[in-house]
Length: 282
Image 1 (tube, rainbow, N blue to C red):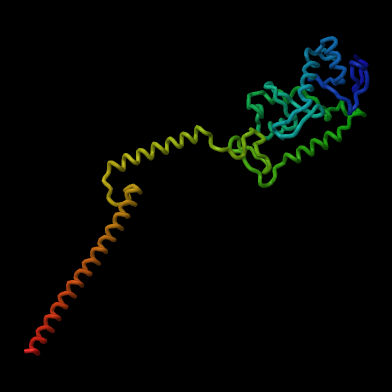
Image 2: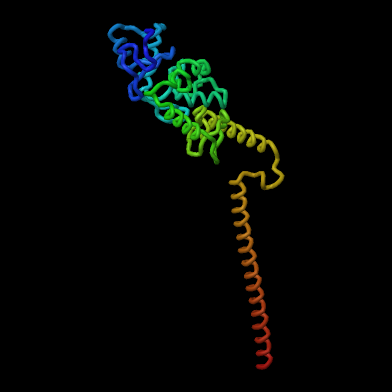
C-alpha cells in the first residue's frame, strides 16, 4: 500500500482516468466503481480498500447508485454519477454546489425538499468527492482541474440575481421570473386559498348576513332604503298601478263633466229655440 500511486485504483492497481466511472469514499480514496462493486458482491467487503475505514466503500457505492438518476430540487436540473452530490439523512440528493450556495447565502441547514433538520453543515464538510484545490491533486496528469473550475464558474454565474426576480412569501427567497416554485422552499409562486379557508370565509359571511337580517328586522325602517329589494319593487309596481287608476278616474270624471255640460247646453238651446218658434207662430 505504501507504493500506491496517487491516481491508481488500489483494488485492480490500474490508473484512474477522467473518463472512468469512479467512486470516492468519505476518507478521500478513489476506486473504479466496477472494482468496488465486484469486491462488495464477491467478498461482501464494505470497508475502504486503502485505509480499511468501516463501511466507507459501501456507503460510497450506495451514494453513487442513488445518484444514477434524479433531479436537484434547488436548481431543478438533473444530476448523475458524474456530478458532485450530497445526500441528507432523509435520503434526498442535491448538487453539492447548490447546497453549499444555499447554506452560504441563507444559512439554511434543513433539507430543501422536506425541510427536515438534516445538519447540512456537517454533511457538506464530509463526504467530499472533489478535491481539485488540494495540493495533492496538482501533480495529476489525468484529471484536468480547469474543466471543473470553469463548470463551477458557469454554475455560479447562473445563480446570480437577475432583474424582475420574484420573492417568495414563505421564506423570502429570490427566484427567477420563469421559476414556478421557490428554489429554496418549493412553495408555488401563485398559491390559491385552501378549501378550509374558503369554507371558513363563506361560513363567516353567512353568519354575518344572518346577523344583519335579524338586526334589521328588529329595527323600524326609517326610509325605503332599509326595506328588502322585493318589497321595494312591489311598492314601485303598486305606485304605478295606483297612478294609472287615478289618471283613468280623472279622465272619466272630465269626460262625464263634459257630457253633462253638453247635455245641459243642448237642452237649454233646444228649449230656447222652441220658445222662439212658438212666439213666431203665435
